[in-house]
Length: 167
Ligand code: FES
Image (cartoon, rainbow, N blue to C red; front, side, top):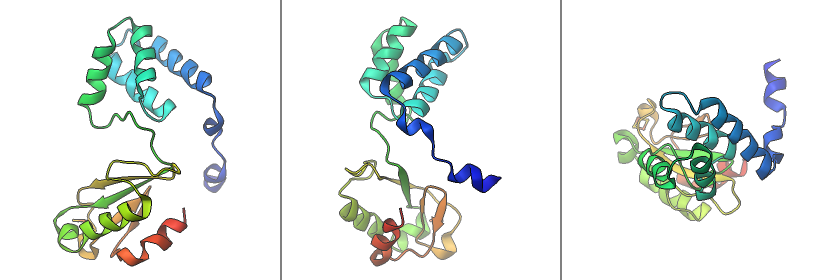
């Protein structure tokens, strides 16, 4: 049963812009009177839209009847909100002490070169977002990184391109 769920193609990929905004509107209506509603609405809107570009922020501000500056202020204050679309896959390279000492930076350099992005950016083909993170408890097998939920240990920068090809 589990595997069936995993292999299903998600329909929201094909969702149109209007459909996404309609869903965000439903969320706004549901949450508008709750305490801390703006943050909750932004979280859900990011989940629906994938990011919070200016036009989505404007949409939310208008529907809530609050200034755009208030919405933008919250979006820029919290690091978990992003205005850029995310890639299909998220690569996180560990820069905890052990991984840093054992070559975490080299992994980042190689990934920047292979993907043509800076840390925090998304590759042009929309496949990968590159981020860094702190220790994930695999220090004994440093350097480590993750792609989505999969952990890669003792990562060799020369093997990175063949790892990326699997995605
Ligand atoms: S420092 Fe990278 S896994 Fe612990």
